[in-house]
Image (cartoon, rainbow, N blue to C red; front, side, top):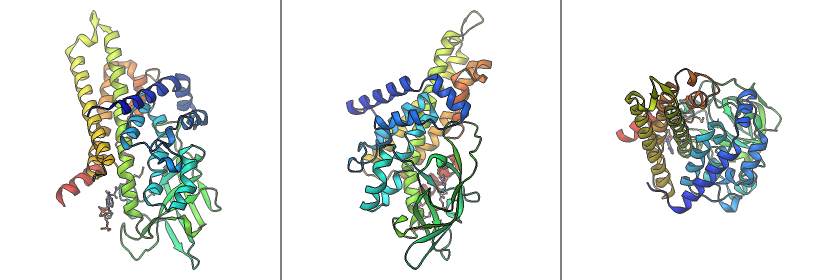
Length: 380
Ligand code: COS
């Protein structure tokens, strides 16, 4: 796919922003403290990045999926963790409301999320329900007045420590087996009974805290239910189709960042009297890295194009996520290899890329879940 002028202009804007604002000092601070940086988040919000894909009538920029993928790719090329800052509101955070919210719910929740005034995150995973998301045990008991009482624990919830709202999936009808009888709620994180686990000490993506969300007899009003009761699992899957596209774009950005670092280093570094780029062992690795990165990019752009055209894109999104996540890891591995011992030292960018890349084939559905989705569609 060749990007048109509109998307090329947006790509340039995202690249300029990332290269100017994601300074070494900021990236080192995120790495050292692991804390969320409100200043850069506010700056991103001011530029409208947090609402790129949220419709204009709800305070966003009304952009398409391709713009969203470009944004995540360009940010991840410089900083994988900061690509998530601008991602969540456009995907797993705002996505469920855009998909199934009533007009009232959209008007209430989306504008502050699009503007970065409030943060909304997504809570599907539980300690015992990871890839088997249909094994949700969090319970929502309906009361006579139509309100609900929530009890349960969600785990590895990215952004939960900063969140004002959380999209939560809970079983409303335990008589229905597996993924059936699950509903989707928008949970106000400030309600009594909501508490947080301790922030996880992660291998990478430091600076975007992740923790458990615990719900103990949390009383939520009737209008906290989003979409149809008992139909939440389908909404989760549909939201993840879009989210997976974003994480696929993150994989492309990481691969591109690694490739550029490796090319630069291979031209500068001399061994045996010449730049290591002149050795076929190195230049062939670079060729493989570039080819895999471009193939991943094309899968991502194609999946985005399908979504923008309103076509069924579930399989294309899973293919893009699967391929790009694996590509990011292959490319990061080779980038570290080309750097030799220096690639193992945190001063060199590829060391961080290598650790950050590791989560991409895990979150928003492991590579094996993507294989399940793709093969499931092939064989149905
Ligand atoms: N869109 C809409 N509906 C979908 C769907 C989609 N993309 N995928 C599945 N569904 C529906 C099915 O049609 C089915 O509906 P019925 O109950 O009406 O028949 C229902 O959901 C269950 O589908 P299926 O039987 O395929 O579900 P499984 O329990 O076998 O699980 C996987 C399928 C593994 C793909 C799913 O659990 C999954 O994606 N797990 C990973 C979760 C994940 O990504 N977690 C990360 C959290 S965010 S960091």
